[in-house]
Each structure stands twice: as C-alpha cells, then as structure tokens.
Length: 77
Image (cartoon, rainbow, N blue to C red; front, side):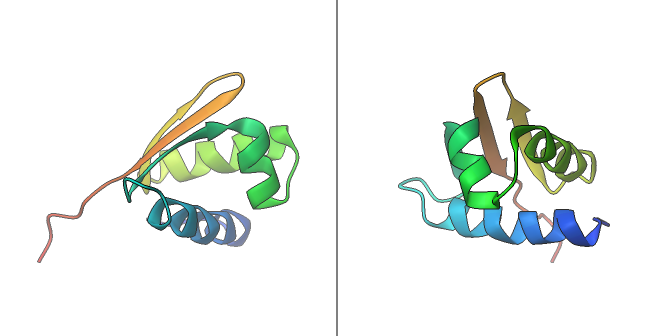
C-alpha cells in the first residue's frame, strides 16, 4: 500500500475515527463530518478517500452525502 503524504495523513485520522466507533473498524458518517475530521473540503475528501480505496487500505463507499468505511483485516502473519 502506497499513499501520497496527504492521503497518509488522512488515513491516520481515519484510523483514529475507526478505532473510536461503537463497532471498532466500521464508520458510517456524513461527508460533512468526515470533512471536518480531515479538515478539507468535500472535493478533496472524496479524492483522498478514492486514493485510500485504490490502495486497498480499507473498504470505502462514497455517497453524495454519506461515507461508509470498514477496516480490512490482514490475514498475513
């Protein structure tokens, strides 16, 4: 998995969000909430999420107003 430095920073923030959820590893929120957490505008957030998705860092579903993410468990030992 290789991410740009900007996407890597976003991924670290997303990991923190994923860890703090009632069901750790799963996040469903509004795009506005995610934009605030990442401190970026909607277009930038969508681009960062697409990069994270393309790198297969986690499962990402991007809607018009919502975002769903689920961590991918590693099977490597």
